[in-house]
Image 1 (cartoon, protein in one colour):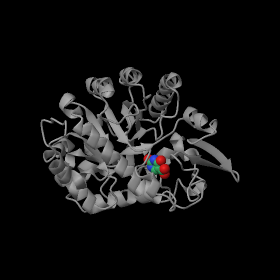
Image 2: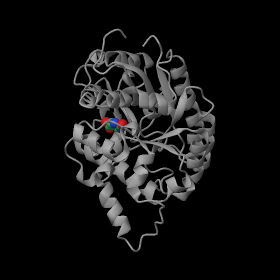
Image 3: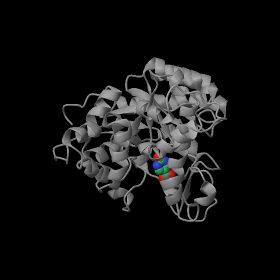
Length: 359
Ligand code: 5CU
């Protein structure tokens, strides 16, 4: 990677990959989530109800950029990314019956380890988890023994009842015990009934962050971080809108005589115990997050290969992608030390990564 990039090389902590076995699962399905072939092109339909809204019913194009490690590396080279911590994207294993989800998690997490092990030090990974809490806790124990995996993605519904579900305690305990990061990421969208008609724009711009906001709020209000203060959490998309609403949340909790919540601290103070990708697309979002939680909690991310540029599949690997470009540019408005911490060193410290000399 000889070209020099504004601010230097990056570590990308929010970048997705589906394993071949996962893609096969989606191809063999007849209901959403699924992959269909239309007009000679594979299209992925994953969001709930995506097939019933005329403006989203054809899903999104999907090609090998979603599973080919060489294409991931080409994207990284083109955008000054030395190392990526790759994670499986939504909807993980939420659609599988419990009996199938455990074995599928083992296979897909082994695929992730193999992809990272063969990347010459450029890729580390996160696994995925079955929804059943005891099986998920056991899988976290296995993930901890895979040398290139650093944690797991977890959806906002947990085992199906939200992240304040006491049944999730074995999952939090296993992640905390093994020092693994749990990456909280949306999939279902909130308020879908008012998000239709404009393609994916409203569901992804608003519904996804609203979902994350609600999920993390429930996690905090349920006292999870009082019970598991060493739990490492990374919240997608700059924390949704929770940073913006944190003061109001404190006021509403303090003013609610009926709340069963007996937290040790005001809800907003738990935000400082989590990590966030810096995928906010504008400086004011990043500034607010830095002011609330500290720059040491922010990590550069891209969301690749979602939100691709409008070029043919063959040009994707050499095209300029919006997210890494805009997020790198925003960081350059910060003091250099802060920018380089968010761009790479926070991730290296948080995930225990080494940047290969060849990068
Ligand atoms: O385009 C989309 O639907 C998505 C998605 O499902 N997940 C994600 O992380 N980004 C975009």
